[in-house]
Length: 289
Image 1 (cartoon, rainbow, N blue to C red):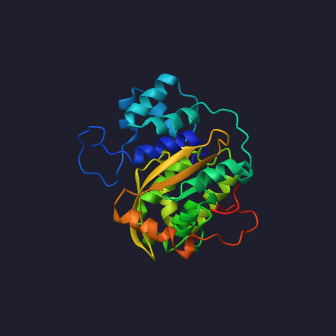
Image 2: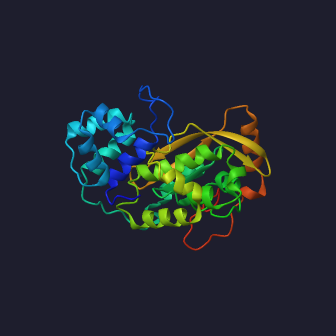
Image 3: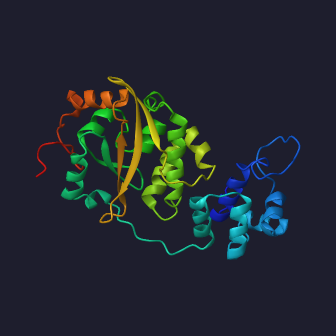
């Protein structure tokens, strides 16, 4: 059920994925997981009727005290709490440039080229991959949908083999989109969500959870067809001059099999510069002065 109120949808989804055990309630066995409305209302110190109006979209402006109480009741972390505040205190939509590729500068491209021992690529808030260094290009290869991380995860059948912990990667992708505003203020993000919802039942399931979290998982576990398994420490570098962009880095543990796998990839033909496609920026060790 969609209430027509983003705040109501958020509260309902978080209530349904929060168990009684998580919040310390002793209850018997239930047919459906999650908390009941009256339980959330009790823990937040509001009436069940008022909480029901919030979920149904008939009450859209709770006080700051109520927001804080709901965040505690549902055990929301900092990012999810911030999202709750944004839904309860909507701000005017902020203009975001549609052509984020236009924010790429020679400085950014040179930056990711210098990380020649680690895969590095530039993404926007929709997780479109706008530029890759040679190692990143070698890792993604010719996989379908390798121009967008979340499309690759949900729409490419090979993704479940490529990501050894596919569920972890899928949850991180969806929570990232929720953290970016849930598509409410960005028609391009909304278009992506609709495409993924049409094409993937797993995406619909995870999107309905309303998890809100930036891409901060510590490790990414990959399986490459040429060099085998790799475990890379994930790092995100924000770009002050291009606030809609960030750099994703993958670092291997020194002396590990993953470092050896990256070395072999770096020396493989897959890391050589391809012919440049219209509208796509590549980085190689040549041509960037």
